[in-house]
Image: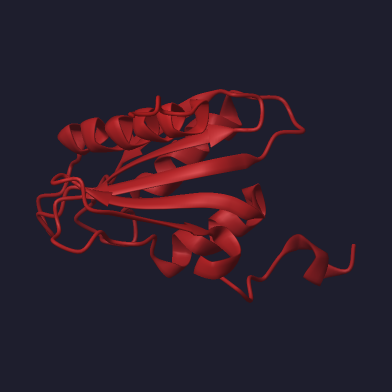
Length: 143
């Protein structure tokens, strides 16, 4: 007896596919590592991005941050990131770097699902809290 994929499984599959497709647009002449990301917001909108490197290195922006910038520059608040998919061609899928984890801490929730995947279908899904258990959050600023 086969079971049909759930709506969440279909949406996660779509995110992974979009993250892998975004890799095609990567500008990575220095590292040669093509990374793609896709995020889903709490309003259901989905955005993707790729890594864009720069000869000054500090001007480089990771795929996850490209997707986040696109999403939050086009949506009214309050929204937050509910799912993130990060794709690479590496044998073991790469997680977001520390800088991207910190940016996600601003826009995600502890239960945000982070899906790490590669082009051969290997994947690992974890919560943002598992990925970054002691994030520096806006609450630390004691507004």
